Amino acid sequence: MEKKIRDNFFKRYQKQAVVFAAPGRVNLIGEHTDYNQGFVLPGAVDKRIYVAIARNDDNILNVYANQYKQQLSFSLQNIQPVKGWATYLLGMIFNLRQKGFSISGIDVMIDGDVPLGVGMSSSAAVCSAFGFALNEIFELGLSRMELALLGQKTEHNFAGVQCGIMDEFASLHGKAGHLMKLDCRSLEYEYIPFDFPDYKIVLVNTMVTHSLASTEYNVRRKQCEEGVAIFKKFYPEINSLRDVSIAQLDLHKKDLSEIIFKRCAFIIHENMRVLSACAFLKKGDIFSFGEIMFTAHEGLSKWYEVSCKESDFLVDKAKKFDGVAGARQMGGGFGGCTITIVKNDVVNDFTEFIKHAYNKQFNKIPEVYITQIEDGAKKIDNVNRRF
Image (cartoon, rainbow, N blue to C red; front, side, top):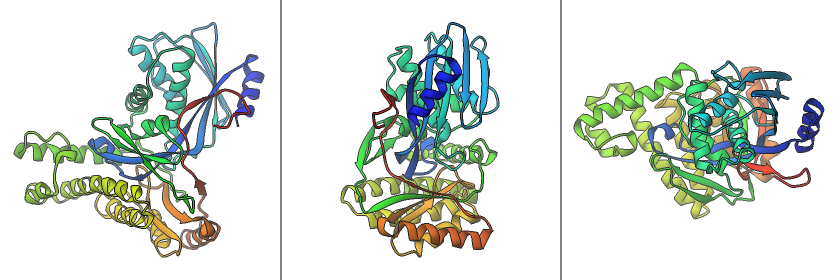
């Protein structure tokens, strides 16, 4: 991929490029907790977005996306959001300029193998790779966390997705063989070993398309905020569901509507699941970790109600397959991928089994991605260097 994008860039722009890459991410546990100032446990994966970049003498962003075979150009004066993938690039430039940085004209090419719309955060990988590239070539001196926050801001004000910090954080801070327990309030994080050479992380795509900009995602966020407002009447120190205990939740169940109670209950228990999961991973207990994944999916499906019949089917089938440690829906919900921990020696059998069962039930064959945990965003110094 690195050589391909370098060669294609030279053919298109007649100049040499500097190449950067940022990975997609999986989140093992801790779903929808990020925008509730809770805990998440993501890891960067071996699927990446690549950005080849060089300066030009005009105040213009020229960009070609290999995935879409689309060339676009934008003046860097009066930057506005646009429809489609280019809005993430424009948003990063706009937000950097808002911080007082000078970003001049650039020629860009984008390519990659992060699947789109399946919950692996391809948009965050674009923001992270492009932000990392701008930081390097314009010598801005920003930290990875500062770039993550800029990526989140871009998702908010240029893509209209009120996401948390997790996706950009994971893409920029990934470490091979480790997950990251991130405190989404303090932004403190800890690397948690994920050293299970006998297991693979398998993503099964429901082939149900979704968009995190959909109304349901933002509805969930508003429902959580409504819950916080009610708890705050009784406990002024509470500023997020992160601050609410199970005892407080049970005590004030009568003060919440049924739907707000269910939303709050899921988030509060999900935060506890992340902390328990980290403890099990530190002990090397993949089986207890897997049980937490199954429990989390039940919460996503029945309490937070962001699953779908296809995801429920895949998790149910995975749970009954010998050699699967755990599974759940991953990402914002309403489709996308399930994430499953599968023993190496049955990965191929599991893949064939799940494809056949899903096709029989829904008359379509799911895509299956076998991944591993890798490093976060970085510069690709030359074509022979391993990412």
